[in-house]
Amino acid sequence: MTQATFSIRRGGRETAELVDYRTDVTEGMVVLDAVHQIQAESAPDLACRWNCKAGKCGSCSAEINGMPKLMCMTRLDTIPLDEPVTIEPMRAFPPVKDLITDVSWNYEVKKRIKKFKPRKPDAEDGTWRMMQEDVDRVQEFRKCIECFLCQDVCHVLRDHEKHAEFIGPRFLVYTAALEMHPLDVENRTQDLKDAHGIGYCNITKCCTKVCPEHITITDNAIIPLKERVVDEHYDPIGKLVKLFRKR
Amino acid sequence: MASNLVSIQRRGFGQTMRKDTWWVAPLLTFIGLGSFVLYSTWAAFQGAHYWVPGTGYLSPFYSPELFGNSPHALFGPQPSWIPSWLPFSPALLILWAPGGFRFTCYYYRGAYYKAMWADPIACAVGEPRKGYRGENWFPLILQNIHRYFLYLAIFFLFFLAYDAWSAMWFQAADGTWRFGVGVGTLVLTANVFCLGFYTLSCHSLRHLVGGVYDVLSNKPIRKKAYGCVSSLNKRHMLFAWISLFVVGFSDIYVRLVSMGIWTDYRII
Ligand code: SF4
Ligand code: SF4
Ligand code: FES
Ligand code: FES
Image 1: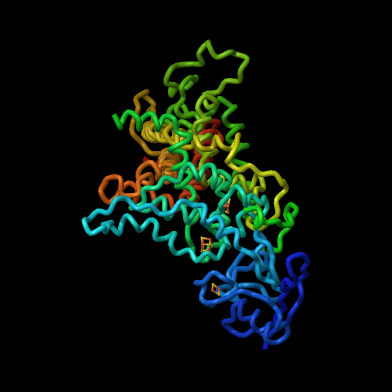
Image 2: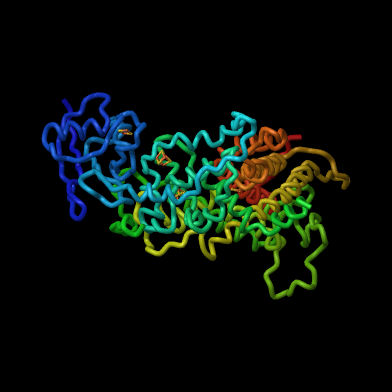
């Protein structure tokens, strides 16, 4: 039976250290299995969040060998086991205990984004009609499982702590889903520019790289939103042309 | 809000728990972009060997040639109102446009912020500077003018297409111009195609042709255009690199043929 060593962050809100655990590795195991096995064998008080073990609940986010990943979707055969595998909590949020972080900042941010505001109903009975091809574009954004891995890897939050000024890639995706929805008539560009700090994103695409749902965050959500902000705020010629067209 | 603001222990430059070779990609970008910038700046200042007498070849760095001493010049030789103490080269008059287009391109921005400015050098790796203003403030807020450079780049494409056409004509011994195809013709034709794919896969173009609307089902032409640009856009990074390489090579090719170091092989 092969064995592997896992260096897991143990500790509370203030101090913590990496503690090594050795455990058996069998075929098809994922990192979350190893963590559970370690809990059962040698560390019953090891705290970790998980729910579905299918990459759908977004609870088991962690940093495995330094990269933000879902523990339940990271197979052990994809990481080198000849040296200790580090498992740490997400860095962009305050640690609570062991692998658990306090992600409540994200829920506060979500409340600040203008809600969905549909146009007047299309039919007498208060219903709407829309074409599938028009909702296709936002469908991608709805795959988000709110694992917050993108928030964790984004250097604006992770390294520069702009949590007060920048909503992060997850919520740019969320805003894109609302803003590009065919029925929505709300305008969020002013907010995007000022309150949501879209200009802080420097399109370095780390969020896209770590998204377990493979949402093309930067290219399909953030850049199109940046372009909409340009329309409103940085394109005087375009504004002028629009003015004349309206006449 | 303040209660749940996050306080993180900042990592120093290059600090990370990553164990893979995260430095390879930024290093390759650094070498690739760095050598292009160096070469193109050098080539732009030369002001010579950018066209080949007896053929229609003109280096893309020098096209359109507004003023200059080659037969390609649109408005004749260097005008007297340009002070003679300024370094003059036809490339310096126009190269800011394609240069600015690439500089403000969403792909290149992300790439050089990483490789040249280490902001971040790679994902989940510590950064050298604590302060950060992103594209929210001057000077990087100016990146938002990308679409104006896009208009110029589209305009330039027509000149480059015309250059590819010119590259199909060669002067015969009796002085008449005859149709032909040399290796240079292929290079300059490939160049306009690569730059075309790069330009037409631009994020700003994608927005302008259709992305600006939430409903496209009632705008069939825009819908088609949006679909086309979007599918090219998926490969924008690839086109960015290929076109960068090909445009650089086109200049090298014309330069070396013009200097007589390489011989242009005639196919037809
Ligand atoms: S692309 Fe923007 S939002 Fe995504 S990780 Fe980079 S800076 Fe953050
Ligand atoms: S966008 Fe992707 S990485 Fe970000 S929270 Fe949603 S699923 Fe996770
Ligand atoms: S346990 Fe649900 S995503 Fe990993
Ligand atoms: S985004 Fe790259 S050329 Fe416009």
